[in-house]
Amino acid sequence: MQQHTGQHLLSAVFLRELNAATVSFHLGECLSTVDLAVAAPIAHRLEHVERLVNEIVAEDRTVSTRNISRAEAESMLAAGELRKLPDRPGDIRIVEIDGIDRNACGGTHVRSTGQIGALLLRGTEKVSRGIRVQFVCGLRAVHAARADAAILAQATVALSVPAADIPAAVERLKAEAKTSVKDRQRLREDLADYHASRLAVEVPIERGLRFLNRSWKDRDADYVKLLASRVTTAAPSTILLFSSESADPASIFLARSLDLHLDCSSILKEALAQLGLRGGGSADFAQGEVPLLELAALRGSLVAAIRNSVVEAR
Image (cartoon, rainbow, N blue to C red; front, side, top):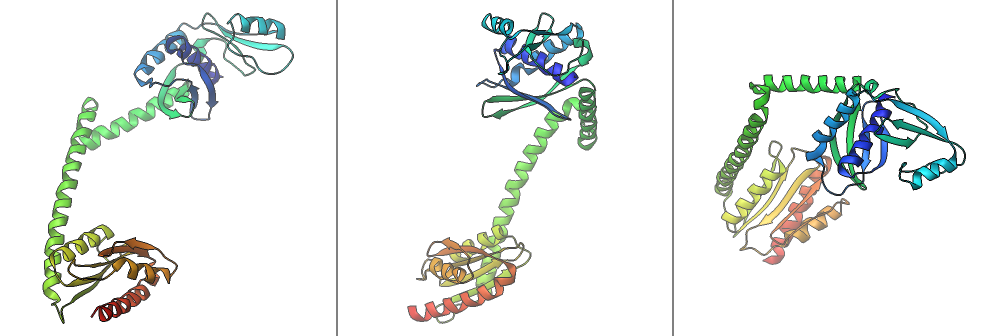
């Protein structure tokens, strides 16, 4: 009853203040909503609407109901005294909030606005027909405010700042996190450069070719991809087959330095296709994904295909 009457009052104030008509509403167990036919954002007006609604609640205006004939209801609709009527014959039940709203409605309602208790707006979201506004009334509003206060108290402890300083503290943390991400990426790139040079030294060029065949369980796919790119950029006469086993499916990379002629994309696509999988890339750098259980078989077929391609090229 509180939520339903609160919806009537909220919809009436939205229409009066913002010319925003309610096109649908939902009364949930924990949260209720009204959908408003508006195109422009209304977030900046929500506090104003909420204040006006609660002022009317505090005025304890009478909420009354009466039945009228269909003909009288249609006359009221034509005169603009009602916004819409249900599509059915017979008498129509009218619910009226004194001086504020008059609606055809068959639902249950409180006897005065004071019994709504209070109305708290919870947020908005964009929907197909406009803006959806979330609200709660009565003890639900008290419970929601109490839950918000508990979260706020936790945040003040976690951030070691007063409640008023939480927004600034969050912005500071976001800035620090952004800097940390950049620093971490820079270190990651430096590590990949060092790792690439070490691999090139470990495996010498034999008969005009360096073949690097490595797999890592403790390196993610992004790092292994970066490492493959660094190796083929810095080390000449190099073909590499790298894989990351840190997740399932595993990621696999086949690449070559630019001074070689090997179609990495065709070789990897063909090997993956034999397992019903897909991959892609360019002639000098290709990648794909494979279930961990099938990784060993794929790597074996790729090594054989690489050797055959190298022999044919020679």
